[in-house]
Image 1 (cartoon, rainbow, N blue to C red):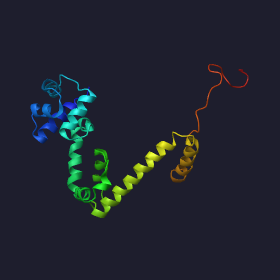
Image 2 (image 1 turned 90 degrees about the vertical axis):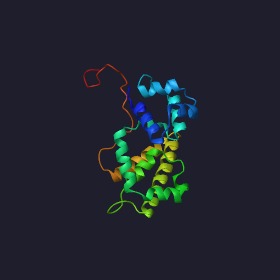
Image 3 (image 1 turned 180 degrees about the vertical axis):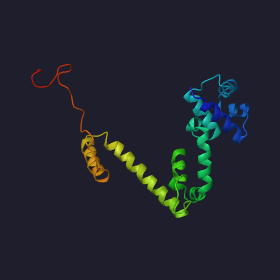
Image 4 (image 1 turned 45 degrees about the vertical axis):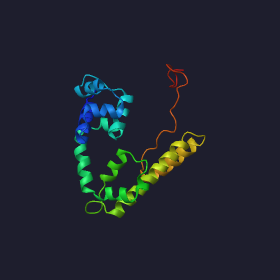
Length: 185
């Protein structure tokens, strides 16, 4: 089992200056359980991680981030200071964003360096539009129109990425275990 939850719980508590007792008070998770997670003696259940995340004001996903990635995240945040300003000035664009969405935005660069305010806003709008399209597509693929949608996507995809077509359906072997070659049937 990965020790990422243990490492990240320790990191998050240190970053916020929170003691075990304070965290227990915020979350309702008992001190013994928190100590067990920190010492590596206890594997936290998903519900416990969610309660700890809520008490620390972070997404539960934060417990599974490789600490080495945090250096890249910090670098991206420092090299794109306009992102924080855009979030403060235009919170409506960033409603329901995940940590991953912010990471993707902060890792982008404009021509010659960091994003400008307009570059941040344009990228955020494009990401929101793509997310909306993905949701609509996922819904359409669960309807009676799924085959039509799949064919349209394949046709458009082939104009962008020429190459062999994806199989339309998996061929079924009508007589498993029997050869279908001539003279063997």
